[in-house]
Image (cartoon, rainbow, N blue to C red):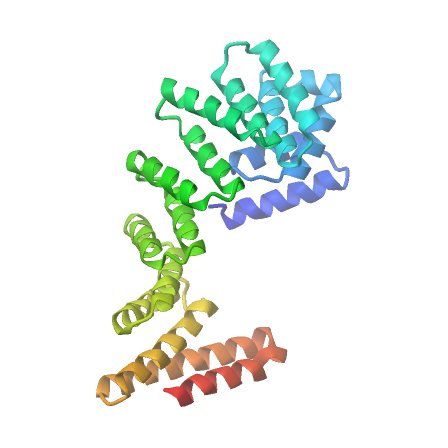
Length: 302
């Protein structure tokens, strides 16, 4: 994840380069370091360096890294001729490189030559079954073709080997959600929370899935994870505060509001509602009336 400091630095450099203030190479390096895909800007600023012999030669060995970066950006932007030209330069310099071969397969993929790309990726994996990038390219290719079930299959196989890949678990959860397979998605978020218990986003996403599943037990667990998301963000997570209100209302309806515990739950809902109203009053006063109406409706239904 990109930190606030890195994001600030990136935006500063981006504005500087866009306004002709120099620093294109520094910007491209930072984008690569943070593993971001600012493809249009990378393509424009990268070509401005590659098309200038003096600037290009000043890079030294990093020239080849830039050719690779621009090739990928060009494919993202469907400037396939530019990508092809960059790959040709790399092929000439590194004729036996697997890394360049991977770019060739990506170009086939970008052209929509799915069968040829699949053959190339399969060949690479036969040589190196632990090539994470190739595994992920196969997932991306399946998604591009709309074969979500195949993408899920590839991701599950990938995670059998690379179980610590948090991005892959999150991607798998989102794919399951797109198919309304919420139980499977909840398992993915459980894995993420176990490995990264202090990331509020995972607590929040897990709670959302449990709330969607419904049922008393799921709602009670969802409420706990909404609460933990609030705790991890210092009480500033608006979505989680709404989640507390929604879960409490649903739980009280299911239990018919007969127990003392339900009264305690309603107090929690009232507290979350007050925090939300205060927050909207400060940050979006024009939306406060609608928010108040929604929260009152939840309280009445409880």
